[in-house]
Length: 141
Image (cartoon, rainbow, N blue to C red; front, side, top):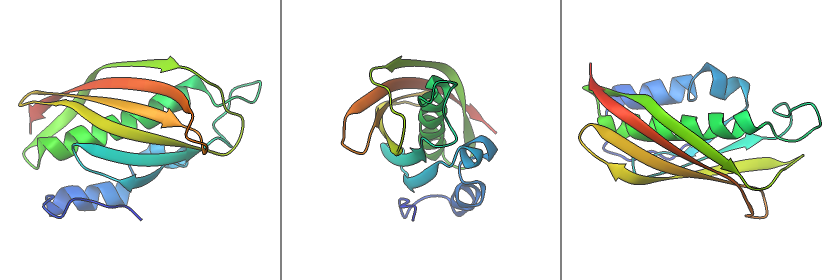
């Protein structure tokens, strides 16, 4: 179940719920759990998202991070603007071969034209797997 702030634009809520975060997020099995501009949480299975030696693919960490950072920025942007990613980086600290990865997205800056979020990926024991930082530019529709 996805938790959304009650004051969100109904059209944005419908788009988020219907899309599940977009086609790539759905294909990767990302489940959106809690969404807001300031704090968002999602999880993703390791199964189906591994590289050749069975580790969770580094790009999968980035997809989970970018999904959360983009959605959180879109919520901050509101109904008359949209978010466009302009920078993303990731530091991978630990590998994982099974289970679920949880991404926790925290706003660092929520400005008029830019949003920056830090997304920390952890395993089911709470160990940090990677850290993603993303900046989005907010544009008028």
